[in-house]
Length: 129
Image (tube, rainbow, N blue to C red; front, side, top):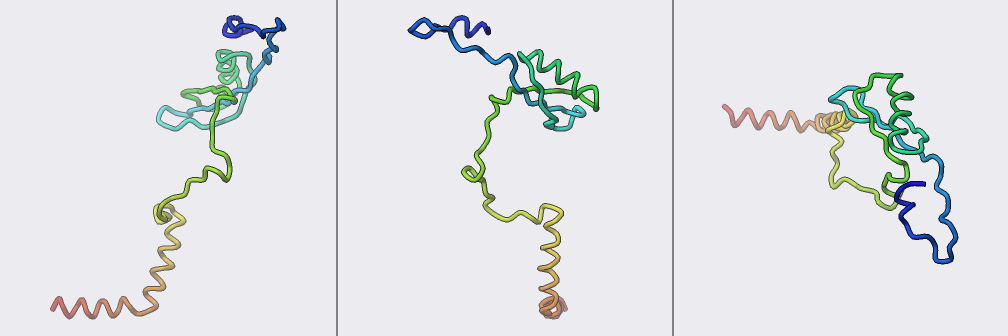
């Protein structure tokens, strides 16, 4: 029994506290090299934090390059609920991504088809000379 649970008062009717689970699930995050982000690589079952770290080191640290390991109890992870807390961008920034250039090219080709470029160049040259 953990030290925290030993110091908790028992139920009023004198019955013992329910037993703690023998092991807990820990999620393992691994950092391949010093300047890279941590990546979730799997999970381990362990009785406490140090054991989880040892299991993670043995299970995941030996198989691949590893500079740093995090272990987090799965029941301590917090996240959004699908569909409820969806975060939407205020504006389209697809042009910053590689697939966004296809959209820019499509718009540019529409612009060129209209002949607007030729008209623009004629007007621009008149003003320049």
